[in-house]
Length: 360
Image 1 (cartoon, rainbow, N blue to C red):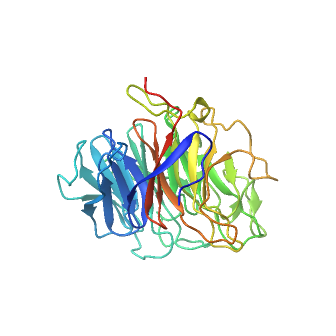
Image 2: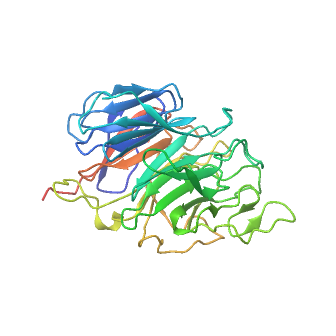
Image 3: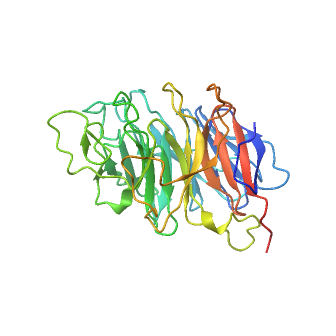
C-alpha cells in the first residue's frame, strides 16, 4: 500500500526491512534502520533515484536493537540492556570496529515489557529512553526503568532527566532550541479514552522532570485516591489515548543542495508517528504534524479535545473494518528534504517527497 498524503506529496518504497523501527540518515543519504530483532540494516543512498538494496550493517546480541543515532562520527545503537557505540565515517557500509557497550540499562537483567531504547543527541549530551517493566506498577525493577537518561557520549555520568514516564519511545531534538522532546505512551486500563498520549520538551523542565506515572496523568489528575499530583509535569502537546507515539522528528528547511524542501508551513514543526492501538475498536496508525514556535505549539492543550494541536499527514494504514497494512515507526529527514518513514508491520521504508519542490 501507499500512504495517503496531502496534495503535492508522493511516497515511494525504497526498501523492505523486517520489523523496522527507528531511523538515522547519514550526510550522504545512507539510511540506518534499527529493528526489533538483533540487526541494524543500512540502505545505501536511500535518498537517490536508485537506492541500493538494504544490507546488514551490524548484528548485536542485545535484541531488540531498535534505536539508532548518528552523531559526531559515531553510530549509536540502543539495545535492550546496553547502549552501543560504533566508530563511523560517512559512507561506511560495514562497521570499522566492534560495537562497544558504553552504558547499561534495565540493570535488573529482566526482559519484561517495553524492551526498546530510543536515542537522541543534543549539545554534547546523549539521551536514552527506557520504558517501564509493566503497565502501572511502583516500585520498578530498577532505577533506569520508566525514565529518560542523559549521559556523556562515552556513556559516563548517566543520570535521569525524566522519571515516572511510562514509555517515552519517541525522542526528538528540536534544532531551533536544542531541547529534547519525548513522546510517551500512557497506561492502559483507565477510563475509556484516557489518558491522552503526550509529547513534551523534557529538557525545558528542571531535572528530573516527574511525569507522574502511574499515579498522575494529563492535567494533575490522580489515578487513585489519596495521591498529590501537584509536582507532575503537564505536557505541552497531547494525542488521543492509545495512539502510541513511536517516532518523531523536527523538520528543518534543507540548506545548500537540498532539492526537495517541504512547504514553509512544515518548517520547524514536528512529525510524529502514531503506531495505533491494540484496544478495540482499533485506533488507526497514522503520522501527524505538530506546528511549533520554538518549543511552544501555537495552540495550548484542550483537555476536552486531544485533536486540536496537530493535523493528519500520512494515513491509509487501516481500512474501515480494522485491517491494517502497516504501522509506522521511525521517521527521519534526509539531507535533501525528503522524509523517510519506517513500518514494523510490512517492513516497508518509504521516501516521502514534496513533488512541487524544485532545486535551487
